[in-house]
Amino acid sequence: MRYSIKHVQKDDLKLVVLNDEKLGTEVAVLPELGGLLHGFSIRVDNDLFNVIDNYENREQAKKGIGKTYKSAKMSPFVCRIAEGRYVFDGKEYEFKNKFTDGSAIHGLLYNKPFAVTDETADEQGASLSLLYRYKKQDIGYPFNYDCNLEYSLRADNILEVKTTVTNSGDRTIPVADGWHPYFMLGGSVDDYLIHINAEDMLEFDDKLIPTGKILPNDLFKEPRRIGQTILDNCFLVRTEKDRAACEIFNPGNKIKLSFFPDSSYSYLQIYTPPHRKSIAIENMSAAPDCFNNKLGLLLLSPGNSQTFTVLYQLSLV
Image 1: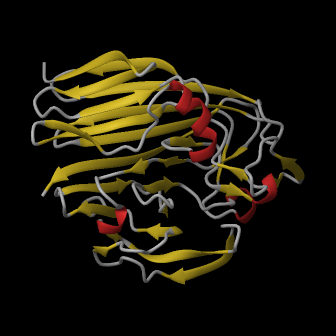
Image 2: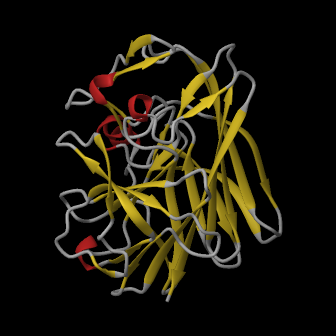
């Protein structure tokens, strides 16, 4: 059979690995810590090359996930909530845990244990389904909802990542969804070429909170070298079926990564960390601080679900 799924322990991390036996492509997932994406690897000169900037071991992952948020599932909100506060249905809520800048950041599920609910492998692909049931754990979000993740490895080095959020409570809830992976194509990001298919971007204040202004995007509308550019910006991307919303390319080793979000992910946050060894490219359904500014905010009725999907494609060009 072309595709397989294995449960392995590597550097004391319990991983589920999806494998394309024909091409050698692998996808590694860490269910017990936020269901995060630990690896997406392709064959380069007969060796596996992993493009995910991950955690080396369990201790590093446990300590680092709440600081770097590498590969974190952002749910039920994305990026920042100003001062960790918002008003919903006339009542003010405040999140218990806050980042060093005083904002609530990257949701509530990034370090939660997801349960494996299904796994399948055949000649067409390999898929892994994970589930976390959120039950009013944070005083700032006293609602119930289910978060289902599905990783699917398919032909042509395509990884589909699908999230389905279901309101399991008895009242309408505010929801946004996103991912926070860091990608490394080798060397420094300064040498990567990047293209962002977006005409507009959000203006931020000094705390990375949208001001309400939409600015014309003049960054990387055509592929060019990142160089010394420092990015921490949110773009309103075009989600076209046959055209990538974003692409990064390392001319040194010819690895290209393309992003194809569906219409549910119309925002794209891009961040270059100071070490310049990887770049965060974050598909999001809403804008930062959406619980306050309502940009992209989804109001999900009891019993209803919403699915968010992005395809990542690796290639050698």
